Image 1 (tube, rainbow, N blue to C red):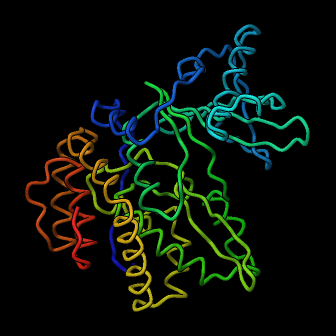
Image 2 (cartoon, rainbow, N blue to C red):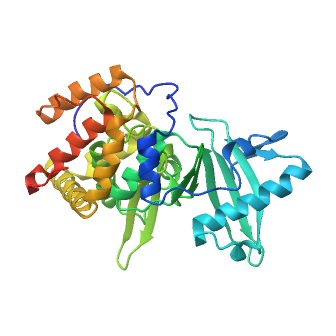
Image 3 (cartoon, rainbow, N blue to C red):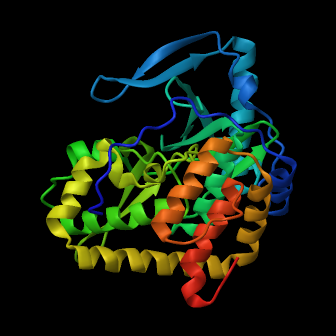
Length: 350
């Protein structure tokens, strides 16, 4: 992680890509499609909004939406049914004691998602889930996260609508500001996890992992505290042309974590952690090979990035890996080549 490079520049507005027939077929085959009672377009019918402030009194960049009285009852019923689909496979009996407290709309970023806050009437325990536009890039990102990362992802698609469960954790920017120097946290463990997260993101070509696009999942252990960094934004899956946009270490928002790595981990240990992460990914590839091959087959037929970005990434990765990317004419082709480079040492291939 000592490579020097200028701060990468993210495309200001990522192009939204519709779900193609090959990707739709994959979604159906692997049980990611559901008929939903409420779609993204339905939630856009709000009549007014109110700014949502965080607990420190700052604008959260979310607004709380308000609907007509007739729309509210219908939407809230449908949203409770969607929560049942996410959590209990559609058993509607369990949502009778739930209510929708808020429907928030994000005014920042590419996807403009809705965030639903749902509350248990018996104990006031609440949960969140999200309703978004069904962008192909995000679906590929979610599937690759589910297959290649240590974490599982729960989501479903219906035509132009995508629903996702909430990924719990402390947002990276908040963790860096408020918790990075917590004396109860082992900074070496934090640094180790950032090295591994950096490697995971690069191998599977997940871009734009600035600090507000991932969370820290913290687990107390019998002697220490364990950390897992989890991506929460998958819009920039295999979209950008610059190699460094897939390496979290090059974003200024992650500077404090990079400095932590430099302070606590030498180059030999960094190489060890990178090798460990590549080995784990190779094992996940082996255990889910057929599903991954089906996903890559759909991705290779799909257009999820402009031609100039495909050409640039092909050239930069060829130099980085010192390997040929000839014949890689889509982002799916490039990703398959990257994953094959990881598993070639084990004699495997995709």
